Image (cartoon, rainbow, N blue to C red; front, side):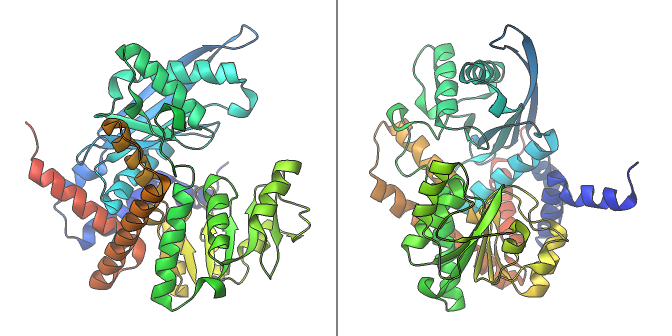
Length: 424
């Protein structure tokens, strides 16, 4: 039986409701027309497909897949595809809307999309994953394309999955179309700098926050939650810029060293042992305790709903840089504001990934590829400009950074819609 307390927790942790709450506050502060709000709030298209796959043992399993295109007002839909057993349509809806706002904050010419397949990829063989990926792609193929919808990797998907998607689409089109997905292998039209892009973007906006607060990297302590592509790369790049990474938190434990962790040595330890725990250069500590350590920067880079009404009161950081999508609930936002924590919201902080995905799409369409220095220079320019745009909105409208980022995004998408008009 569900108790009222359980219902409240479920409500707080629902990603679609979280996205809606931020949208509503930003739209209200912008005094946005009610009809325009309806257009912006509603996804353009939601696709559900049922994917039959012949497993290696001959059994047939049917998987459920989704693709949500939230907005195409500023360009083709853009967003990742995740494979996970807990994928829900509400989650995909929320993530698609966040992609719309993220692309608008970064001021790149994409709308928002997201996809997901309900499956446990860890129990599927490579051949089963390939069959699943190709059938999913074929089932949504009429909605994909460089000018329509450009997927990318997300949770439990990678450049190999993108290669399968690109090949499936190309076989149906009867010619190679590298620009249909991003996050591909370099040899198939991928971009240099793409694997590091989200973590590097977190570094750039954190550096801007430090300038605003009068701090220097060498005097800055950092706790990173999540040690995957985003958290691991952010930690490595920050350590190279002399940040002191005092703790890393993963699903199976956490490690701590007040003098700073050798991040690259920790990566080698995990590669060798399969875990970050029992690392000789740090002590094991409780994961929750690590989240509450006193630090200058806390960087959640794993999943949604890490900073909640339960955890937010115990945070002991000056800056919260959201490397993950949706790590903070709306109720927790109020707690963070009361504590005076400077939040770099997810739709700004982790926009580095989609920005370099945009660069990859541009390079594929040009047939001309950039060196990594050019990719990183242009990424820094966009991340710094986006940070300044958000804090300017925050200062002008006297709102915290998350609502400022939403206001900026809504303003840009609404402006595009008003310029285009509504086709009837």
